[in-house]
Length: 461
Image (cartoon, rainbow, N blue to C red; front, top):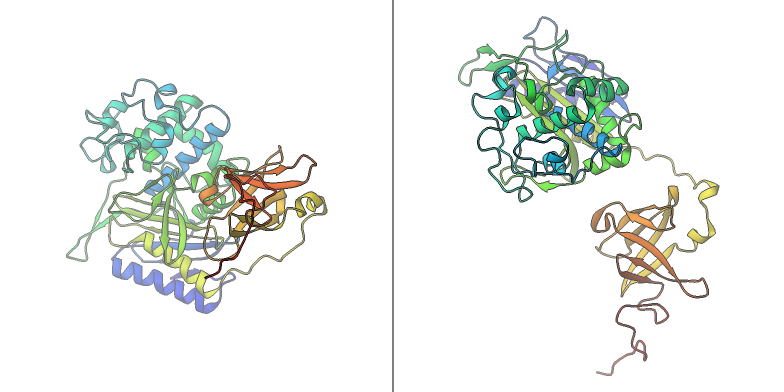
């Protein structure tokens, strides 16, 4: 076992080592490597197995399978942010002639386009992409077994279409666009469509005997945007930090937050939901976003907990045997429980944001008789939360026109605005037609349906 010991306590490092060792031993995988990234740094990495002469380290390449889809989704969101397409555009608008062009780009990203899960035979993951030189060869004679927009149905050909879309809009190959616009700016120099030494070999392990068989590592051709990439624990850790925080050279934080929002529930036999190129799961009360991946000879997982500011990566060189997604989730849990995140120091708002008019809006508000508290936050944003019990609450970001837009929960995308009386004083808050007043059913405010003129009263029993 090799180990990086930076920052974590010895007991935490041993717990991580133990979990990796159990995964490799019980999963019967030749080699496995994992890492944990916290506060923007790789704070632990470890490897187990001795099938190769040199044990896999954090800089050792493995195939990452469908984690590639997240990279492809980032490229599509870049095109959207540049105004070159809209996610609700039909594919046909930018990539004509596919035969499935009425599906939207958003549906392809979230696997709700109704496309088939796989290509026609032969099995695309274990054969050369040269067997499928055209999109028609990828889609086959029955490319859309489900109605678009009605269910989540995972589709590898769907991400081939997105890769071809990127090529059509950019006028360059998917791999060149990925290298130029994502890999190089983020410093992911050990992530590539083809293996670069040192890299692991892929193996199949016999289910009833401790013997192994080499797996082919084919160039997937048109299917590359769905699963071609090779990468390392170090690079995927950096990529996870990007997914959490954004990088304006590649994709801003707001667009990455959009990718992390659920787009559709997963199929009935899968847990969690799916965003735009990202899986979203709940594990022991913790929300994890990222992706798992597999190709013959390799298994991979990347999970990010935004709340814990932590990510874990697990890579293995076996066709099956170890649940890398569960293992990566356990690495996050072990560190989060053993060494909880230390909160950032509280600091006052910048003086420029201590606006008296905004401060005057803080405090208690009432939606009917339900009490809410409005808090001023950095960036001239606000939070509106129930003061008692459960209820709808949200964060709101400031808009140039003096209103706010909801960022999460029920009020995502809804507009919060201040409604003033004729004399300029604040009458009430309007949130998507809901009226919030300073007193329960304030008779001076424009409460829908009006307020009884006799006011509040008691009753004799």
